[in-house]
Image (cartoon, rainbow, N blue to C red; front, top):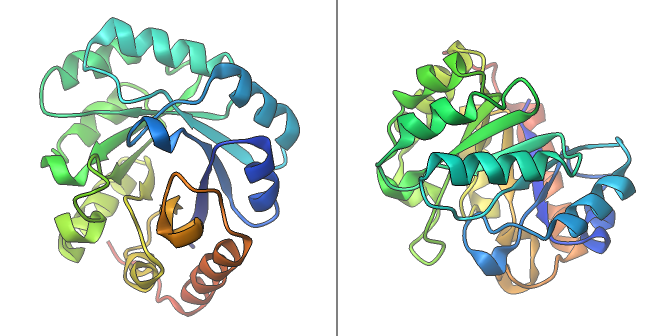
Length: 233
């Protein structure tokens, strides 16, 4: 079954999805694909959720500099979130960054975010699992250039999910997803689908969440889960 990840920016938005989403994901959409919220905001949401749902948080659109990423992950883990998400932008220094972050994987669950619009290298998955990462997800870096399904076809998405599942990494698909994408992507059977813009007024990811849209997305995903055939790798 595919879970529902909802990206929020505040306690008020977390309250809107608390009884609906499986993962409450904290990010600042005004600061890029994986913009980070202030630590005090993250801490406030963690206290509000109080263990009722899994909480994840992004560390920002950071350069591929190992020590910068390590410091950011350590600081975000200190807020008490369950999962810290790290974007692997471009193609340089990924191995060095993963190896450095491996020093933290015994202290917190780290999910690597690969970008469908930047020719992601699925061979990274083996190194991620050897380095103790908790999961891997696909997203898009440029939110103005189309969603996930524009950049990777269903075959590629199935390969990503199957490869990650084979090495026991949690899997997620996100990237300007729309309601119309849910049926196809739920059939790919990732552990979760991530949404922000589709939950907002006018599909504008920097706008506030809309309760009607949240419920519509949840209903469609629930229906797809109930009718999906078992995944075959």
